[in-house]
Amino acid sequence: MEAKICTECGEVIKGRADKKFCDDACRSAYNNKLNSDSSALMKNINNILRKNRRIIEELTPANEGKTTVGLKKLQDKGFNFNYHTHVYTTKAGANYMFCYEYGYLPLENDLFMLVKRKEA
Image (cartoon, rainbow, N blue to C red):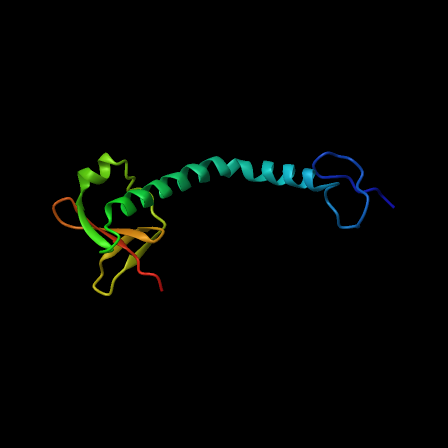
């Protein structure tokens, strides 16, 4: 019978026949390396999404759940319009861009309606 070798460190594996790693440290190290290629990009995108969400949350009055702000105010706070989590289209055809539960709708004259989605 051929000895099984750890996928990460190359040591001989003892135990179950379907085991791929000699211990949890090797399993974690292997998976961290495997996921590291995309993690920097994903980390940057998630940071942008969180920042966008914080900006909308900060500008939206908690008691009203919606407000209107100008483009300049969003730009001054560092809002990045290239990133959002999803789009919600109303029955009337308006497209709200959302960053998690906070969204915005482009209006005329460089104005934006900011909203917080009501919890279901």
